[in-house]
Length: 431
Image 1 (cartoon, one colour):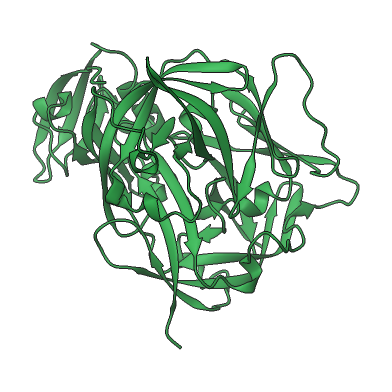
Image 2 (image 1 turned 90 degrees about the vertical axis):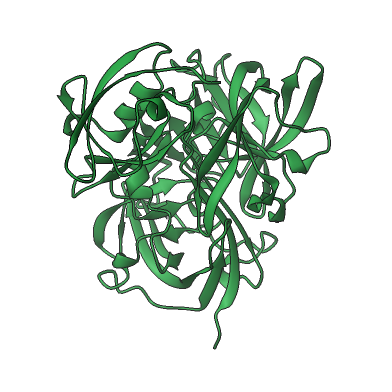
């Protein structure tokens, strides 16, 4: 039987200014286990004990992404990205198929965004998933035939897949970025958080993804209500698709950028800023914003929207994502006043090696400090200010490159031919 088409607009945008991951799924001929919302199957996850009302899960916060651990079919633990932007759970690491004895169901050709060909994947049902205090006895996964997203290289630690809608429809999910902790509540009996600092924003759940409608000030004279995917799997602050509304346009001050890599090739667009966004009673100003090109496939999404909001913005709040009551609850935390900064170095690093502590230059932004310093793809970063890079995580290096306009860094690289190349880079705010 020929493989059916499964259209996943999955952009793993290793966005040099703001790394982000979007996973938009639009399917024709979904299998019965992932049919439309009108007929809801039983909740896939439950508490281990029937008497439990909540469970606390630690997570790692890497590159503005939430990484949780889970055991599959009694093996692991494995690392999964927790992402409201995905409508079906994914296993992105095909090496897990044999040790987990994953059953091969219907085959699909997965169409992504970009310039290359499609990818094969298969559905696997009845996978037992266990996390501290919770269990899914028989979860379905879409298993990719190749790890084209390379989440591990981007995050700087092993990542084996993505969990999304299945978790968020099973619980009211409280996310505490400062504490790197999740608190999962029984959804039907959950009561809103108390305290005058909490504010709420209505959620719309469509095609298994959450959307918010919020006012965005694009300029002094233009304030528009935008429909945005609430996307915890996106490391950027805000993304706007200018083709979604004739009133939307690119900002005059912008950078052309190769935004990253999708399932089917390169994603291009611009980086700029919008003046503000209103979330309940709170306003955030001078938001760094991505503007993907219209031909990158976002216009084919199954639910019309204007873009998405990611964790670079959302991490500034403690939040409760409550699908059952269609509410997003927000309370500012210690990160609320942090400015939105673009990468000031101009190079993108890929983590490699057994422990993901070797860092290879993947891309260099034209006219950036990295470009001026003569860096090229393939160079390996060896030290920062005389400290070996093995003492830094990729998240820590990213923070250094985003840290301060005019800051001077002394970097040592090794060329592909083995030559050592020391250089001095002065960080520069470009947008």
